[in-house]
Image (tube, rainbow, N blue to C red; front, side, top):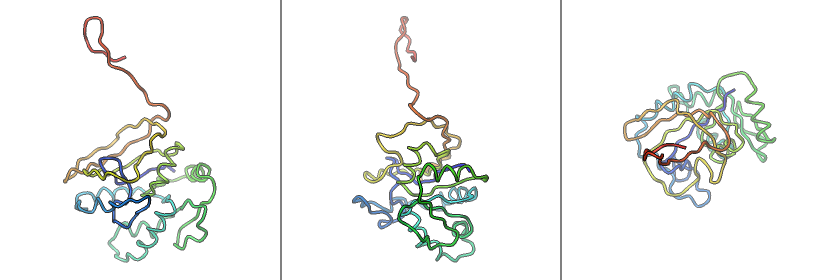
Length: 214
């Protein structure tokens, strides 16, 4: 399976607690709920398109417990996201959780690289990560992410967990899809095409006074 990361991100790279103040107040984060003022009518179809490609979920423990406390209670037959959570496999990476307590869920307690590597070797379409800030960063550092899909909102949160840690692993990405939505929201899809140190260069002046790239 292909490992794809899906996240809401602010202009300054924050992915923590987008949906509510109490969603993730860890590390003193007090600005949760920063995407709520943006009308989901404008970006909800993008999220629906993400879930339409899903074969299985990969979640960190905290995000799994948050989803478990909400989605099983959504009984609206027209809610496409609730249906996906109800009918698709959910894998949760945790060294402390023993009983997932949610039908269709499996706890993976081993080494991250080994466990995720086994899932990626399975046939199928997409193994999707949603939320799970700590897990996303660990997967990136381990070189396991194939694709990033993001909705970037025009807000500077100013605190909170970022999508990528600094210092951290470098990678080269190719933007394969980009769309500007009403309200200044940008939908992006980026494929990882290179891992390791980034390509670099320098601007310089040639002997005839022209600017060149070296």
